[in-house]
Length: 422
Image (cartoon, rainbow, N blue to C red; front, side, top):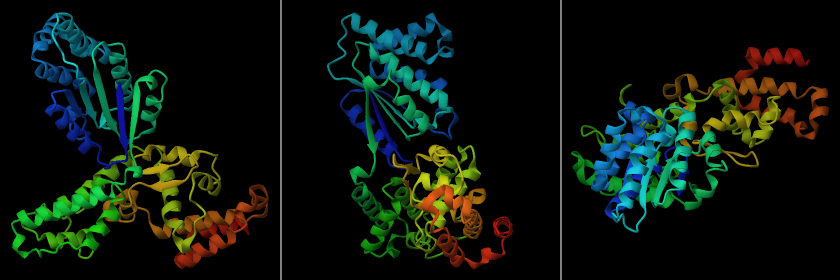
């Protein structure tokens, strides 16, 4: 049996996986864990996976150690064979042989916890590992349960939806359904209390700091994801030579950072850069995000809440917007009806700050000018006829964009399109 625990980036999957491993270890049913991590070579390489699991199995069940060692001695090249073969020779066969000798493995099922699967090198490798784990334990008489935690990447969704895995799969989504706001608020409250108590400059921190209003503000900015809250806490109390009160003001943008090395959002910057770096056509993604995050806000204009409306606006084929956003499933959600929603409110802050996003920066003036220029193409009579009444208010859209930023009247793209139209 496999349980897939999935959720947005920074939703708290790793914290849950670590906590569950501690609970299972306390009950004597933890067989092994593997926590993938993209920035550590030894923890992002699947070739180390089975060897690490086998080593932990030998420690969790000491009687299995001689059998696992014998398997390695019989075939020293086993670590260079397929994952399926390694799982069979180093884990399943030794445990089944141990069980056949009458060794009591107990009635409680053993648990293997795999966290951060999406941070393993290679999409095909990740999908292959899921299939290997499912195939290894489907017919095994051993009661072994596997927990896999990851982001809901499209290729992993496809893998978990396959007919060979469905019969033995359970899912648990970390979504807004579980109302994490209360947990995040409590985490912030407890963390700041610890800072007030333990920080070297604690004598300069008011006992009422931070206020309930500030805690609610930070909880709201977290968007139900723990990574913003944890980043805030680490930065605020992480420097023994800086006042936490001032550092929290930097987070809240009430005071500027102290130079280029003072990076309050380093962890979030790394997360967003990693997610966006996996996109194939970053220009297309920036076009979509520009329309969704900037044009929708300009003058209260809300004609682009869905992938369908954006497809039509850009003259794209149906489904192109959904396709280009598919790699961003861990930070942006596209519902079945095509509705787009941000899973991280702080993503827009990142994209609107050139010092943080660099080449990913969304310039408000550029986005509005390009969209106004493109909007002029929809004013042409033949477009209005073929596209129907959806564009009946195109003129209003252009006026709203123009009014929101008059500087775009001087942009080359607008002059180019106005010449084509008129």
